[in-house]
Length: 397
Ligand SMILES: Cc1ncc(COP(=O)(O)O)c(C=O)c1O
Image (tube, rainbow, N blue to C red):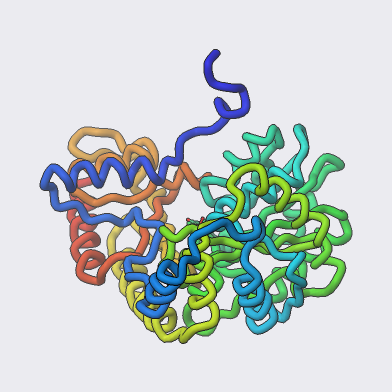
């Protein structure tokens, strides 16, 4: 066998595959409405781009310390204190090449072969794959829409075994957009500290929350949980900087140091220029972020209302991120043009080829009764895309 056992365990990212197919159709001249996007459709704010240009002109183009520049770590320290009430020293912070890289570093650093890692479902597609690569075992906790796709402390407690090492929390969530309340987080925190397991808290959508909901970092509930948590965040989603590849992790020194050692021998530092730009993102004016959040909220409201007006479809209003997890259970099992809609993948495929609308099938997030629609696209596209979906659904029988 050419490919190693470790790497053979990975499936390709299905969300990227759908985007690629939609892009191919677009290149062939088809007018595709894309609801697949995992990134804001806004440009990176001008002040951030300018700071990157300045960094280049100043010759800030060489290696930096692996774990990140002093300036960026300082900006991240201040961000944690101001937004989350969390105090970290520079040694407790590691900057990486995107939050995805930070998460991979955490899993690789904490998990041995055979360790169990608890993942609430619906989940972000990469968690189970990363867990499998290191030879650990994803233990999926299923949730329902009735519980707003959030695990309860009782569910968490009963999923823990002597082999459990880590639980991954993601609030606001991709794909459901749900946000854990302070009480719900406290409940989970109690279970984690009592069981003595570790927590990876993926807070990448922290800044994209609507309707007065509040983001709470689980690490902020005291020293006990802080010692057991690695918080992951980044600039990708909040500042429309997905291509710049800057994410960061904060946690106990021993863990962060080990992650930094790993990074020493894999990527070294993340791009020097992107680090300079990220200082400006975190410390500069936040007006563009606020404008973007206002626009996302408008789109969310429209999308949810429209979906709920279409017979056979429904959606619970998400509180954050930029995704809507649309319930398709009432149309599954029916047929479109004689083709059986047997699962979310078939539906996504047919929607793309017949209605020219790109969505992501829920099966890739662990729930086949749903599909994910991203509202990180213009209002005009959202209106047109939902018109097409409505027409498509009318032809189902
Ligand atoms: C839940 C979640 N975590 C992490 C990431 C990765 O972010 P980054 O682009 O900074 O690697 C994403 C991106 O889609 C995400 O949805």
